Length: 245
Image (cartoon, rainbow, N blue to C red):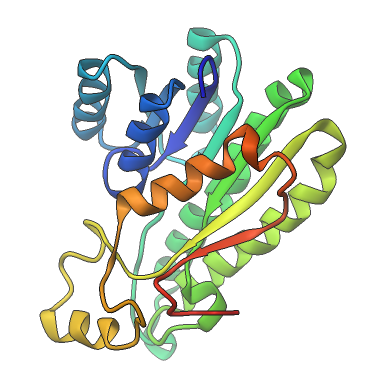
């Protein structure tokens, strides 16, 4: 990753934070993007303390003007963009019958439309360089479905479709586009779940434990590396055997 430049969305916590730290540890310069400025500052300080280079970009991926300004800040600072990790995500869980339109829209806008807006901004720099790595963070539920998450499942399944479409469109420019599909991962998003719910989830995982954000980060960084240059349009499952499709 030496001299590579990456932008990671949702970098303030969980999988995004771990990915930014691992990328920086491998030698990349990292633009850490998220809505929470305080948490972003903490990530950037941790990277700097370890000898890495990073900047914080306060950015809401649902707002096109903020996305455009955020990518401009990264390009102004580092001069190029080699890697984009679309990780920003939210949940608004409830049964489909009770789901409010605003809960549907919020999840689709952040998890799917936000990724599309970021890809649009990244492609110009990547096409000029004739090099790029785009990694979208989807979910095992995009492949299995899940009760009470019609909006989240739809958005994450849409990310898989987006991954395949962009992979085909830009392969001739040496831009690869892949997805990582985490299973049940211990993150701030899953921490609030009641213990009986967590126990029921774990009962379905053949490896018998939740995954870690570092394990997902390792998969993302592999797909961002030159070793993965012949992989595109692929969904890499990191789920402890929960889904074997």
